Length: 325
Ligand SMILES: O=C(O)CCC(=O)c1ccccc1C(=O)O
Ligand SMILES: [Mg+2]
Image (cartoon, rainbow, N blue to C red):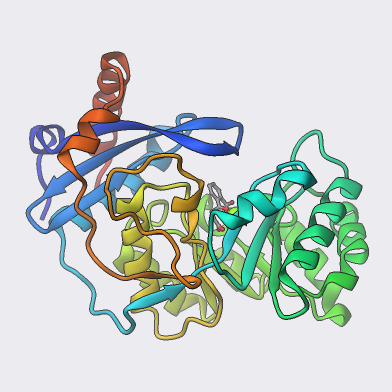
């Protein structure tokens, strides 16, 4: 199952794709697509991640392209729209990229934004979606416990589905969860799962009501399935501004989970201005299909990263491959 590093480099296509809107401060997304005997995998840890963290992403890409497939239980995955921190006037236009979705995840607590800005965005999304729509917010750990409690208070009238990673640490999440208990506002853990040495610690601490799980940081579909089973909590599968190849990896996990009660964060092909296939995994009627994605060689060529970036990614793959189990 494990290709050696020369096989990995021979299988690698490094691309740089434009985003339709700024996300996490970036306007372009670099990714490596790897073709193995069993399909395609994606290796795209964010540029600032260290090698230890990035090695899990490589393990996931290798599993996708060289490993066995997990049996799937469903053939489409309901997804949410993901709303980056955009001005209120642009919200309708960004959401329209996702087509007909019933669920929106709104980024909040971004640097330079006030709680009033976040509340205004949530209000606008509720107006667009109507009372039936589902809204969740993701603070990426940007609030302390008091700020998060305050935000929960201000957002109380908008019938939120859950708060994703309101605070950075497991202790803070546990404290907040205690304070919000009477409010019936669930807390989802994302970074506390994918960036922790122990992805089960947050569940063991009783610090979250549900888990956000992503295939690459958890080292693959098989390991992510084990983590969800051991945690014993509901899970939402999400992504990281992946190409359609990476989204297909997430869809496979979502399709294999025994229970899937929440719409998944796998609609983000809508945030790309270009993808690697002419048949991208864009949401249709609020869902994406579970299927293999084969990049179009023409599109890989058209979006090939510049030579210095290819060399940078090859060096990163070499270092991460040395850390694989
Ligand atoms: O979950 C989603 O709706 C999409 C993915 C997403 O929000 C995300 C994308 C890139 C990096 C971090 C995150 C995150 O969930 O925190
Ligand atoms: Mg998140």
